[in-house]
Image 1: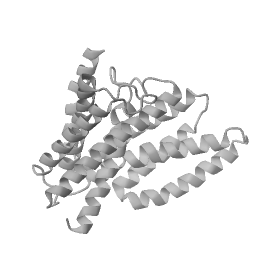
Image 2: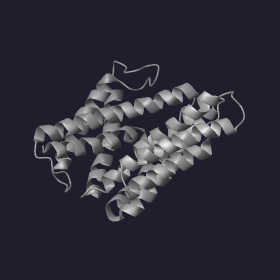
Image 3: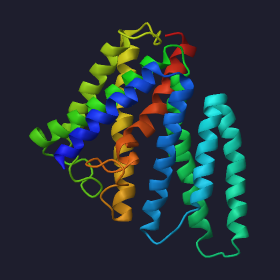
Image 4: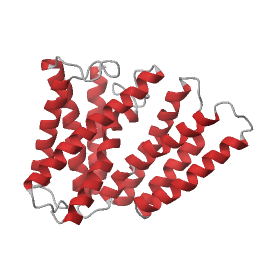
Length: 270
C-alpha cells in the first residue's frame, strides 16, 4: 500500500504541476473539470452506499456546466446558472413520478453540484488571475505539505483528537502543526511568485492561516461524509490514496477561500 502511495505521488504530482505551470488556462481547466467529474461520481457513490441514489447525470452535467462557465466567465455567472440547475433538478424530481426520496435525492444532487463543481471550480478562477499558474502551484504545495505535516506530527506527537467520531486519526497537535507549517509555506512562497500583490506581511500571514484552517475543515467534512456512508475511501482511482475526493477534499475548501481573500484584500488595497 505504501509503495502504491509513493508511485502515485511520483506520477501524478509532476503531471499536475506541469499542466498548472506550463499548460495554458484551457489545459488547466480541462484537468480540473476531469477531477470534478470523477469527484462528483464518487460523491454520488457515497450516497448509493446508503441506499439512496442521487441524479448522477444531473450532478455531472451541472458540475461540468458550472466549471465551464468559470473558465469562460466568472463565479457570478456560474451562480446565476446554478439557480436554473436548481430549478431543473426540482423539476426532474417531479418527472420521476415518485414522491419517495424526492427531498433527499434533489437535495443531495444540488449539494454535490455546489460542493464539488462550484467550490473546486475556483481553482480555474485562480488560474485565470495574473500569475495564476504560480498562485495555484503555491496553493497546491501549501495544502499538500499541510496534509503531510498534520499526518506526521499527529502520528508522532498527537494526543488529543479533534473529532474522534468523524476522523479518529486527526489530532489537535497535528492540526496546529499543519496550520503553522502551511502558513509558513504560503507566506514565504507568496514573496517568491508573481501575482500576489499584497503589501502587508500580516495580511499574507492571515491568508496563510485561514486557507490552512479551511484545508483541515475540508478534510473533516469529507471524512464525515465517508463515515456516514460507511466507507473508508471515496473511490479507488488512485491506488493507496483512495479517490479524487480523498485527494482534493482540502482543496475544495481552500481554493474558494484563497480566491475570495485575494479579491477582498485587493479591493481593500492591502
